[in-house]
Image (cartoon, rainbow, N blue to C red; front, top):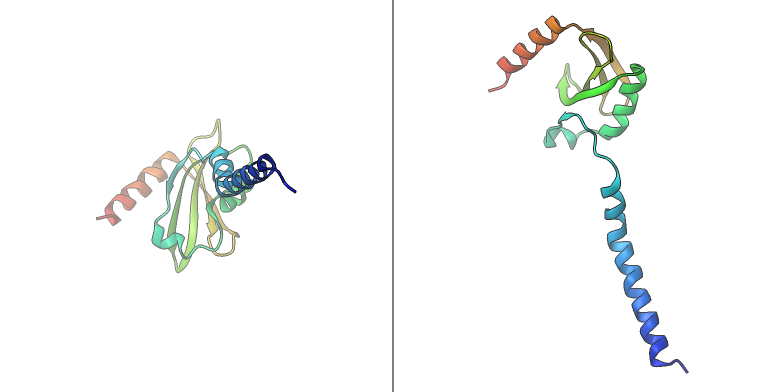
Length: 130
């Protein structure tokens, strides 16, 4: 025969277990650091991406040793959905742009952009946006 205190203890244990299951995952996710770079990831394009942005970021950084991601943009370019990363390497002028296919995770291009190239590209980008 179980006592009232045993049933109460078992009930409280079940309540705490359910609360941990319900809220524990959110607490653990909240502890993970958020990337500290500018992110332009339109929701309508994110729905089409098969590769999560943090996974694509790993591929981009692997292409540029010692680089730090400054920004990422998800865009449709030449019929492909790509994450375009701007990566700064300490001691180098300009940035490395690395493009990662958002559906396969494959690096599909990279190039060094000088400050002059960056300025021209920013002007083009500004002209395209309404």
